[in-house]
Image 1 (cartoon, rainbow, N blue to C red):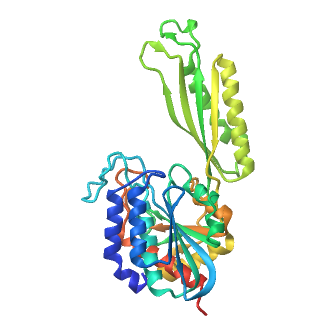
Image 2 (cartoon, rainbow, N blue to C red):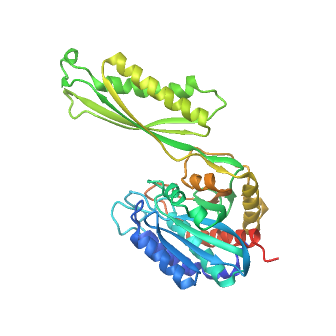
Image 3 (tube, helix red, strand yellow):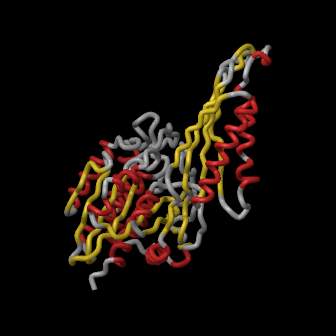
Length: 387
């Protein structure tokens, strides 16, 4: 791997940074240790400006090049997940019920590595805006940072991000032009009936039967309401109802995640979701209360920036290790809000075999950090050349 020599030399330090972050996972916007660590390192590196407290715990740091020029944003997410870790490593989470199970500790480390290199070399004309974002997993920290004006305040013209990918070959990059990841919506449905004894269902209005019928009927949105050439996922992820074997409960609830790419399909899914739930509720004589939350929009790469980022990745990993038409997936990312605000691109970087994202045995591969840091650094040097 043609990792930049200076960044290769930083590998032991980057491993230390990453493992400290891994031991101290924090959730959503509440990241005092994480953001404090990041700000401290940036001060050590001698970056030109550090702006803290954006979106509560986010940071934007600026590094100016040798000449004036445009501003490029590089983003890393910092938050962890509410998971109990089972890796057994000696740097495992010290915070019960919290874990870096998505590799955001690695993302933060890669951007810190690039920051140290860029602050030392400044081999570019323009400014780098290092965006350390809270609350990607829950809370939409990317949206909050955009809403608080980071793109305008720091005159960011383009923005880029990468995400580690377990079980993709080590050091390989995948991306695509246009839609890369889906929009995500979440629905909660509370079903209220009339409880009673399990031996006398005729005296009750049973929410269990209504819920199970609703769950089955909702699967027809994809199979019968959507063109087979379109893309949509409707997954029921939780059902909570009942307390005992001989009681028909008074009420219950279920939850669904809905993933799509286009406004038309997104609207269709919500319309049919509401119609099916309300229709089934009427059929069974229950009351249904629906909360339907429109979440992160689709993550859409700008075509030119995606091509450029893929070329940069080839500089780092070689032509055979970069796939720039990898297709799209139904996961979601709040980097989407930054790509709505500015042209840019998002890429996946392989870290080799191992447990998948959001698994309690997942761990970021420290050997991948210099590759990601080199990608960020080379992207800046190629996008903002001195001559």
